[in-house]
Length: 297
Image (cartoon, rainbow, N blue to C red; front, top):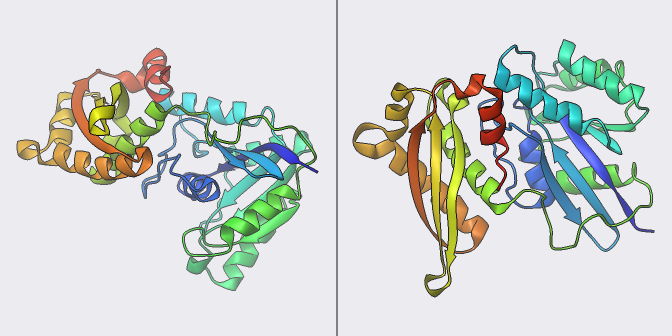
């Protein structure tokens, strides 16, 4: 029997959702950062096998905010929970359920959908803390399975989670061809890899006012090289100067770090051409937010 279905991953910011989807698919599809709210839109990762096809949907971190950018990000969570087969609720050693997360847990309950709870970062917790988190979440939703793990340290995490998801899925069709691992374009993944390096290189809140759009991407067969021109979008001149850095040191370091991951992802050499452009107040303008966080490549 061939199984298939859609598994939506939800959770608070910085609990490890992007780490989870990258682990399950075995490729870097979503960016990871020690800073919260790295993911801005839903990212589809497709896991193929002779016996099943699971489409995992990574979503932005659930949090309460009145900012326009956060509102658009929240709309992606709403859409991801409109139609799915199993919900994967991810939490960590904080084990927090606030008003917004409880709203989405209730939405899963109302739809009478199956759900799995993953408690991540158990290496940072006592047994008493793990029990406390399990009881809290179990009081809000009837989970088919509760998995205690550390996504970055456990050798069995991937197998355990996939088995748990499969136990929640029914017989179904193959939605995508075997060689497709994501519905995202190469350009989008490239832009996210660059943005990840910015987030992890620049302090304070400046990264939240930055977007990356790939303007040009060409494969030069004679050199086995990808030429990539990307625009780093900032809101203020002061942000631009910080991204560039003294004598260009910061942007060179961002380029160096991004190039390493890009070459691994594209399996070729990469010439990365980075430009910094100012678009004042773009995080407050819905049209520009949608253009920059979900470009139509």
